[in-house]
Length: 358
Image (cartoon, rainbow, N blue to C red; front, side):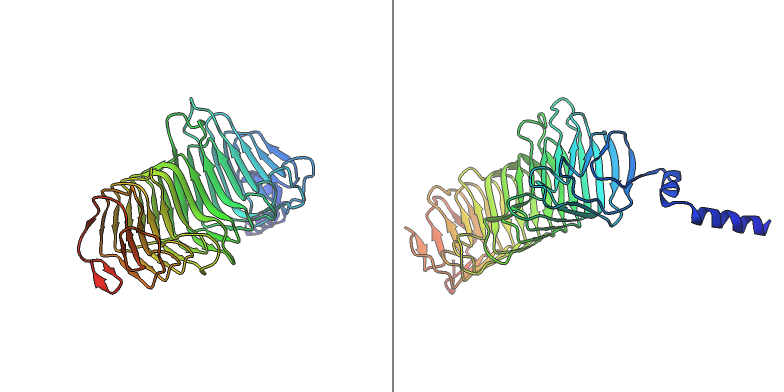
């Protein structure tokens, strides 16, 4: 009986990997150009070479887990097709994890866009993406929930761009972008039409100024916290009711960038505990109304550390520090550190500006 058991164990060990995977319910993928059209759990069993005639992998099924298994999808050299394309006009639930995607335009493209079935979900975790030229790393449109976690994105014009563009029905994009590293990106994170989304714990490491490390448009109730941004700041356009908290922005006084910018249509946001130093323009630039600005440190910026522009009315600010900044053009300045051109600005009397309390 013992001998029989040994032979059974040896038989399993000597079985082809694809057979073992199939017996575990995982379907092996080993050819470039594969189209996954049936729901299931798939696993990559080798590096995939470039597909010159289309995506290296395509997913059209509704419910798919794709384990890259540490291997690479190589689409470098194909400047027209993505590395992995996900397209499902009905509700999708797609998980892609544990591997590399090189090249493609973009590296990963996901398209949902069915307003009548907004409950679609895309999860990307522990993926290394690298492109060159003008390509994006991740482009997602019409998917209502997106998670990107524990991944590395390098050399992208835009690291990850999420947008609905009318494709999510009455809902905005939700989800998480957490604990990722962005290297040499022009814009690391670009979110359009998002709500209750968490952007946290990301690192943006650029060797020179790009444009904006984090760019958010037409969004509500966002949490942007504990991100470490080098040579690129946070830009908000028509963002409301959001929490921008404990981010670090450090520049090199070159290029054309501020630490945090909120435009005139961005209102009722909280800016708390952010640290901004050595950016070329303003540390924090507020143009909208009814924002709460507290506990921020804005030092050694090319213009003002804290700037409430004309029209930035009814904002509240307290416990902020601004030292060693270089602002000059302002109707109501506090030295070169702060500009108070908005109306009905309320101070807690405990801000440290230009070496004094205000």
